[in-house]
Length: 186
Image (cartoon, rainbow, N blue to C red; front, top):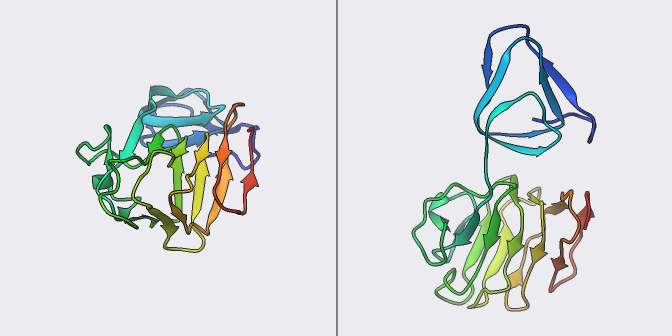
């Protein structure tokens, strides 16, 4: 949920009652009026006011299980080489591909959704020459932090990558020429 003008808040107003908004990505929204706006869990991309509740905290997620689809929770663990079943990455989550991610050469991480998110994506510790690709040419990867690839991988991702950070100090480390679209600060 976001305003159609980046940086300018849209207003959602209700005069009374309670409105519950759960599991949403929210940006540039002002919740107002006499109603109470609450959330069990949400992600404040930026500039959200008038909503009370639990803002999702950041996590570091590790890819496990070799070949697999990004949207399959069984491929995401809270520890390197751990048990899968974590929620898929959100804009506040760092994702790591390391020595425990791939058990054989050329195993592939497939972006199987139209849009996926992460804070920082880091492949620099990956072994066994993994591959990164997408099923749909219209796939969009939203990166809210750094983007680090390694020369020890095949990068076949040919969708769009949007860099969406509001912070300085982020890095892009690529082993191939890619088409980048910058929106935010590096």
